[in-house]
Amino acid sequence: MLETFANPKPERDYQIDLTCPEFTCLCPKTGQPDFAVFHIVYIPDQLCIELKSLKNYLWSFRNEGAFHEAVTNRVLDELVAVARPRSMTVRAVFHVRGGITTEIRADYHQADR
Image 1 (cartoon, rainbow, N blue to C red):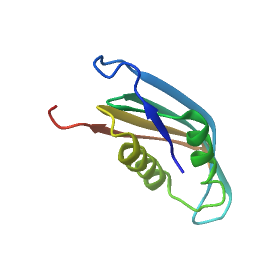
Image 2 (image 1 turned 180 degrees about the vertical axis):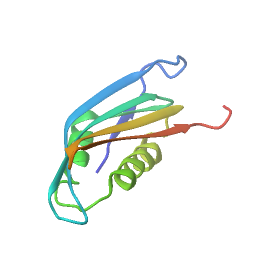
Image 3 (image 1 turned 135 degrees about the horizontal axis):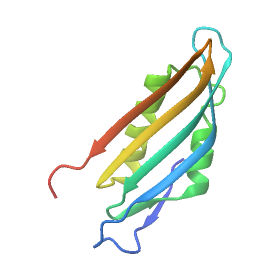
């Protein structure tokens, strides 16, 4: 479901910052919706992430039960598998639930190039 396109400047390190403010999944304990803002920051290598496919990918979690920690790490793993960036950070800031805000950050760094 995730698509990529050729990096127009693969010889240069540059950073792409994506903010996805409409992430929704379901609490695996209660079935209630959890809302989050996902921040994806990466340095592409040969490929860049196509934005419409990213939107559709993130929307695919809407009816899925997932703990915050698990879904954040899954998103990182799946984006890295498709885009193979030089580095990537996925930060998910979940809205208040029961008086607690949760923020999860997962990082990936390509082995020595």
